[in-house]
Length: 77
Image (cartoon, rainbow, N blue to C red; front, side):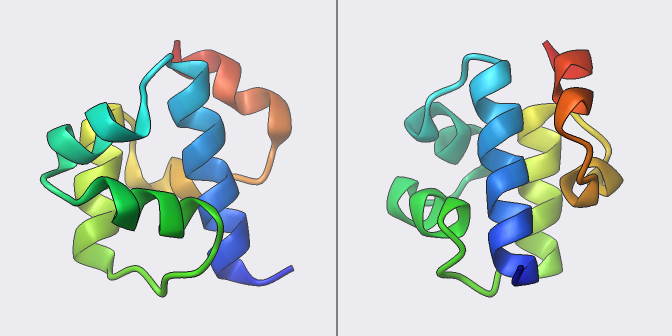
């Protein structure tokens, strides 16, 4: 699977687990909502700077954006 899709899926899973909308995540990360949506479906080659913004907005370590374990997102509620 493409890394963009893996990271996008992970962002979406953590975001949904935390009960955060794309709009709210975009606001907290200072990014556009449509940009968040395109990241989550793997259509964007997102920069490390924007990954850091997203991780901070989700209140998780950046390394968690690359964690492929499905059940790990439970820890971020």
